[in-house]
Length: 200
Ligand code: 5GP
Image (cartoon, rainbow, N blue to C red; front, side):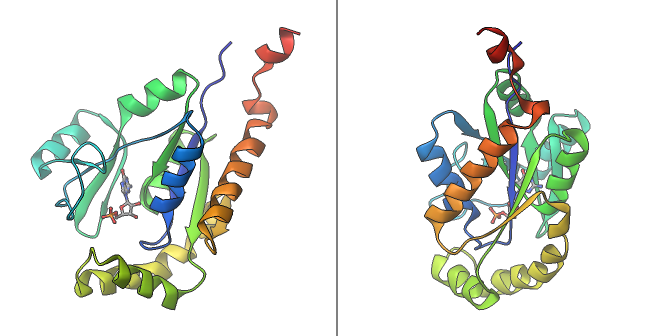
């Protein structure tokens, strides 16, 4: 019996550092893989199709919804975002762990479909720091930054629905915390690969 991979969902406000944490996790753990989402939003400078996202037209996205090709999807800041189903299902059934960097609406859909999925919410150390990080990142216009900051308070009220919460004081520490969570989750009896034990 092969162990089914672990599905790890990472959410948090824009600028909380989710992307950096995920990248760090991928660099350190070659067995982990990241699902690339589809979105109808326009690429930001430097973003590459098929690397950061699959950038698709609204009609294409709506066809994917109709054809049941998405594991979850949500409208975030007026654009659609969704997780392609086949990639995640293939990796999980091959025993590979998969990270999804998605918003709360999507995370809760995942928990319904995959109760064993682990939901991790990342928060920045404070709201003023979050604004500072978004401005420094320089990828979003001011109007968009203000819109995102307004959503943060709503988002924070939903963190109780997550399994874990990480305060991203330093990236290295946050990466270690996620790694510890993954290790602990794999020790749950329901996730334990009993075939390893039987071979002894
Ligand atoms: P951004 O436009 O900054 O790349 O992403 C905006 C928000 O969409 C972030 O909170 C990000 O986590 C979320 N997001 C990215 N991909 C997906 C996805 O496939 N599904 C859902 N539900 N949210 C996503």
